[in-house]
Length: 180
Image 1 (tube, helix red, strand yellow):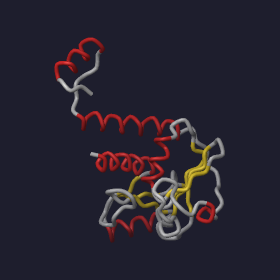
Image 2 (cartoon, rainbow, N blue to C red; image 1 turned 180 degrees about the vertical axis):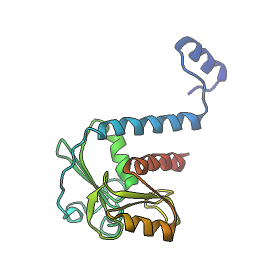
Image 3 (cartoon, rainbow, N blue to C red; image 1 turned 180 degrees about the horizontal axis):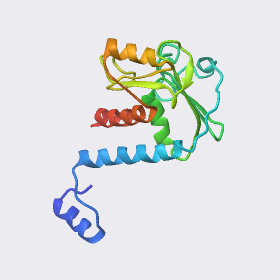
Image 4 (cartoon, rainbow, N blue to C red; image 1 turned 30 degrees about the horizontal axis):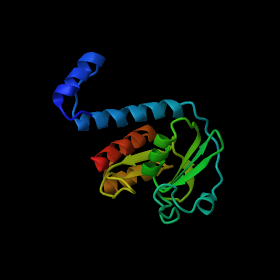
């Protein structure tokens, strides 16, 4: 960042790069972060995590929200190094991914919107957006273990079906909007 445009132009001339506005720089930073995390996640292996996650992780590690109250959006990530993180939502899980880029997830689990059970987040059917307010985010991002349940949710609340990757990307996009 430069106070004077002439200083920025001189820096670009001497070092390469291009001038951009703050919004463009932030979008690029968050976009690149998601791409890096996606590459790490692609190497992860699926595993089973026991269902007593709320007893072991009663509060979200980032915002302190009660994970039992938010059972339908809670997430649990087990990393290959053995660290296990409980969050209230995909928003706080995305924060964990971004502050731990060197950790590779072994398993990423999410609460099924209808059943309270943890399901594999990468295999879940996700609904992004709609009229239902998201947890810790602008848009809702909800996971379903059954296709019919996701379709019924969209019919009643709007939104669009997508993959885990799309839901995580939406979480990073919403973080950018919250921060600007």
